[in-house]
Length: 425
Image (cartoon, rainbow, N blue to C red; front, side, top):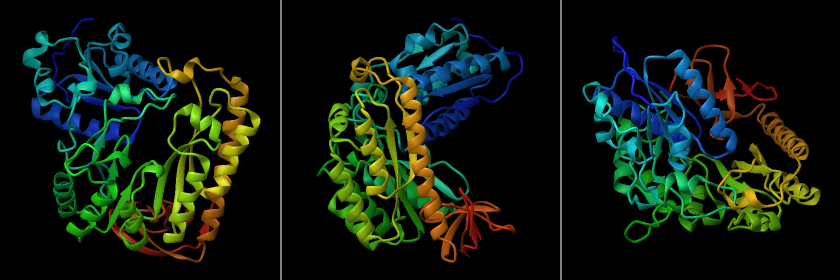
């Protein structure tokens, strides 16, 4: 591994893989790199959620090296944290940074051109020893219309298919006051929607004094930032939803009626083998309750197809869950064994069957999307414009317009028609 430089200075190039939190941190790194004067660098922020994600990261690294032969190539993110030597051994890579190190201003100061020969090639410490998160580093990221705010990082749970706790560390929360101040600044800058994000969002507050819940944070934001038009919550674990969050769902119109649920499966035995903390009836009960409190509520969900030992009947329970929970926006993941996880040692499902089951789940999800979109024809929605001719409803459906609208603003629109994927106003 050798450090390289270039005679011509150019700003760093960033390539992001994986979740919204990674995208948030990529923006933070870009700010840190700029303030430290880092030049002639390519930074790849990796994902470790599946073996395929790691393969794609390695592929991207090789491509970026070919395109930028004289740049310093830096690899960070969850895959770099969980298997640093894999990336350190790649001839294309100059520096490997852990998830803590990538958010440390001193790391980027050390990557500035005047210190190029002093950079440690592998900077990855024990993520489990980290007790704070770096949510204060940037005031959100996103488009002109929507900003994402990190309020939590890490995870204390150990699902048998998941490597992420070993990439992110234990759960840690951004204090409510810091979050509220950040959102106030975002509103002052003109953002009309803020999305709360984290690795295990519903665990927010467990490590803070008085042990507040996510619902407490939501209520506090809506009370103390009255000028915020729309607050959205990213992926949550429904079994951890607290009473105040349910109350907010029922009474706060500025809390968007769209929840993405970390369900993973619809079969109780598979859920136990995954070491999830809910059963299928728990998920159904939550969705039924949330829908009763907020009739316009829509749900998305993560579902894994082909988890080890999954039988045909177990898979049918996942298909049934799409109907029983009234799921609209599905994220379907064909299972692939992740080295280092207990599930990788369990009896595996045939790859052809996994592919077929994933396709069946996606088809069921697409059918639910079509039902939802068709039902919106003739209704009126408040649409947050993401571009001059495309915005999203409160339930996160895309709406296209025939004429330009003010980007970043919320406009009222009557839905005239629908395709398989979009509404038209």
